Amino acid sequence: MSKKAAFRQDNSKIRSLIFVMGLFAVLFIIMKYDSMNLEKKKAELDVQYEALMEQIDAQNARTEELKALKTYTRTKKYAEQVAKEKLGLVYSDEIVFKSTE
Image (cartoon, rainbow, N blue to C red; front, side, top):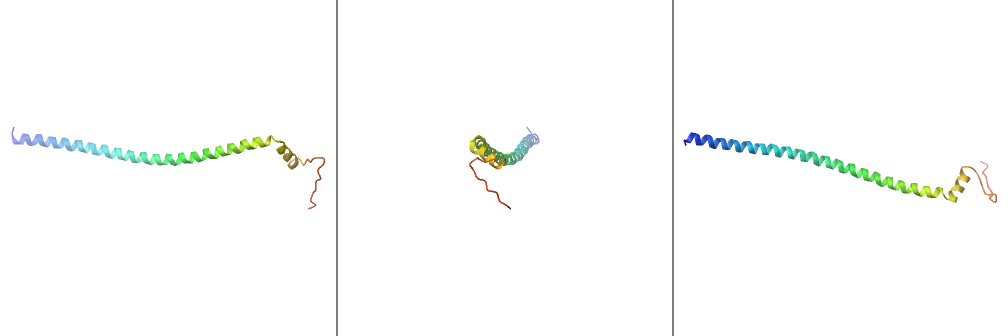
């Protein structure tokens, strides 16, 4: 084999190696870019998740308050309170004082 043919073969191997390394470099850059985008998206979703969990906690607390109110509205004490405040009713043995102002 002549030196010129051997040089072409070596040069061809080097070009192939450079092409493959360039291809891997491009793939690495693409993967790194996608990875950075995914990390950013994950951070945004984590913030959104925390906000939703706070909303769930607030709604659970409100549910408990409403359950307590529901229980209270079924008591005699609540009926008396509404009768006095909204309807102005009193027991027959109660004395009502009204301000003159």
